[in-house]
Amino acid sequence: MKQLSCLTIFSLLITVFFSCSAPQYFHDPSSLKRQKELRNTRSANVFSDILIGVSTVCVSAALESDIYFEPHEQAFKKLNLLNPTKDTMYVNMLTDLAWDENNYCDFMDIRIPPKMTGKVMVPINANYHLYFSTTLQDDDDELLEIFTSDIKKITLSPGMTNLSPSRK
Image 1 (cartoon, rainbow, N blue to C red):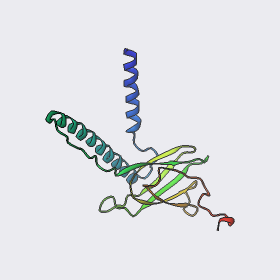
Image 2: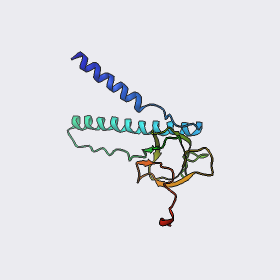
Image 3: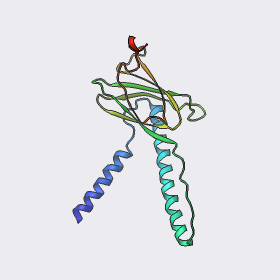
Image 4: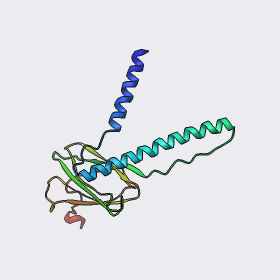
């Protein structure tokens, strides 16, 4: 029994550690800071919804009445960027959505290692121009336009946005 509880506690600690880890593929300081702010805001919203939900159940049981709780609408979601290539993928995400009075909610200089997945917390209902390439040069970037509510995972394959002669 003691071994089972130790295993459960260890598993929970590992899960919390990896779910709370800082974004590891962001190399632009302002983008990294913004990503951490988005994650903290989302965590605070989830925690407050859980706390209010439990409180509502307790008050409802104590007063023997029905009290309904409507959780906050989700404002952020995780977007998975998959790099299927053998090279590091360089990604920039630009939007017209303002984050604060001076900055947009852009994410610059995301570097995803070969065969890895980068996770980016993004606002829901936002349009992003996603520029990606396996080189640092600006002249060979490919462009994808995405709407964050419609997509959860993107595989960034070089050449995927180029139209072949038969598709023009």
